[in-house]
Length: 67
Image (cartoon, rainbow, N blue to C red; front, top):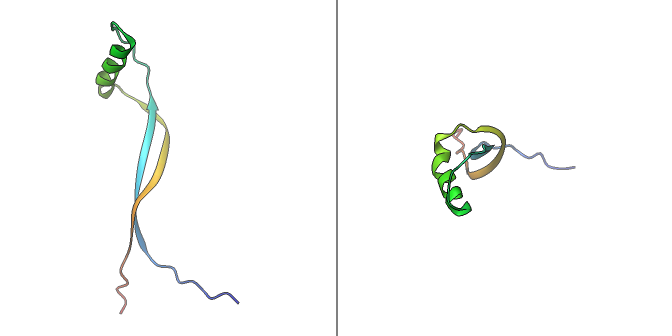
């Protein structure tokens, strides 16, 4: 017979990382310069997010207050 496991409460900090794609048309003298300019311009663009990853960043047990 397997002993019953008592469940506890935990606070779990979850991080969501979203991935969006957008094509920018950039004028530049080289591909390196085009990449640098695109990264400078990227924060001014609207990205539609289609994918996301989730990861646990931390976990803490909640103290049992029933004493």
